[in-house]
Length: 150
Image 1 (cartoon, rainbow, N blue to C red):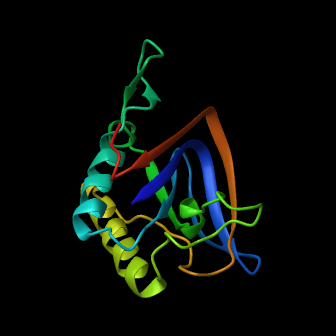
Image 2: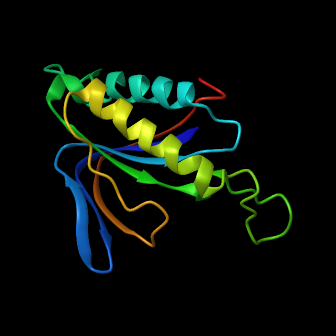
């Protein structure tokens, strides 16, 4: 499982000109899956995200998590995180898990994040053409991969 996490002042996701998920201060999480991913990857990632200390404390040091500040998380499925650009200029999506594999993993991930955060997590529409809007705070943008935890 691979995610790109952005600390935001606000974020929303729309489909066909209608907002279907939005948050204020918190994390926008773009999440992608490969065929080898398991529910354990989703659980590990959920725990990592909720505890990730990227928000400032009283001394303006990134020492607080989204849970510490009472922030929210917006989760958006993003198969293109597994793009390969090795051959030519047209990306290949061969490593990205098919929808019948990635959708249950994404749903499990959202459930795990909701459980760890203690409240529902808004999402985009799986497999839809979405428009994501955000005000990146910092900016702070971090990539995390469950297969290569750094």
